[in-house]
Length: 132
Image (cartoon, rainbow, N blue to C red; front, top):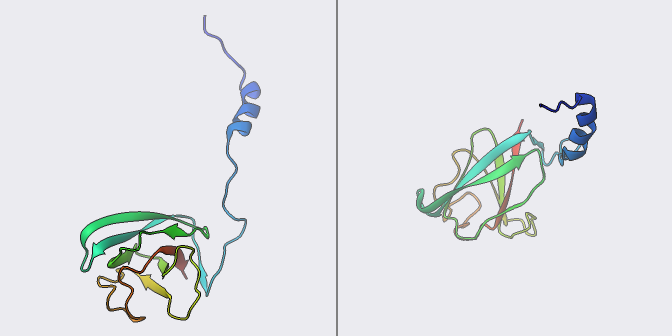
């Protein structure tokens, strides 16, 4: 015999088990960069010109999350449509004028030679935003 439970009895259980959204109620705007909802990623390689050990690091757009890296990056490339700021520390904060590097797709294939100087083996964290 099949037991049937009215949906009205299950609805409160569904509401209890559904996690609340962690997204902020409004977009966080930094330097004219507005985040969009969704996910993006950053492609990171240990050697210049996209060689050596490479990995894709996901980033949740629409958040102010700081993603840590291992400090071994020599090539970095954000996905299309986003702007990412890379930091020479693990806390996504700028403590000096020259400790951040902002990139868009395709990124930098040689972090030894960037517009802000040598960032090779010096990137420890990043944040990404949708630039409008």
